[in-house]
Length: 255
Ligand SMILES: [Zn+2]
Ligand SMILES: [Zn+2]
Image (cartoon, rainbow, N blue to C red; front, side):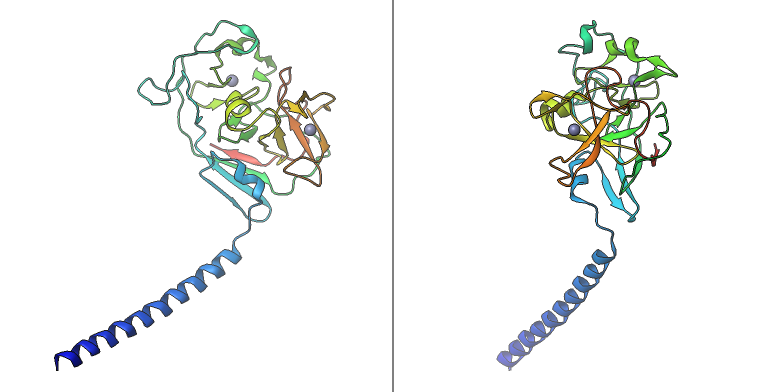
């Protein structure tokens, strides 16, 4: 009798296994259907390593970030592991002067065209975020305020050439040194402007990029876009990232 009940138990266990297996299979099928319905995000956007999520609706790419740098900064609260006293050299050799602001966390959604196209009227870039860099920090334009040059801001850039605004919005107006010297390179893709066109570093084939157009870009094939694409280059002379407005039609950003 004991043997029989053991056998029965074993049978029941096997049956249970079969049932649970078929349930699992159903689950897998459901997952696969969901995956097929999701719009695929092109591989190139996975380079935005600071994003908390990247999705697409087939027309736009939605890049979510918290906007805080992954590098050390004198602008983190002193209690933060990422706080570090200023070291290194400021852009243009100014003596470093810390601004009174502290890095804050935000809830950014950068909504950029999946298939960027040239605009007929090249909209001026606004103050505030005009794009997103690989570590999720927003890119700002070449002005400190309405038509005010950046000159007075240089001295407050941290060792990786970023700084926060009065409400703690950390940003780069010029070359993001942490990306060009640590996590990417001087010739790598560094981010995207809101019009969806990619932003590259200051060098190409080991030399400083020259001959950019009024929007601070040009078109040719890149490692990420073998068929060629219009792209901006960050350089170390004004206007640094973008020139006279967006080359394409910008999406939006919420913070
Ligand atoms: Zn600034
Ligand atoms: Zn180029």
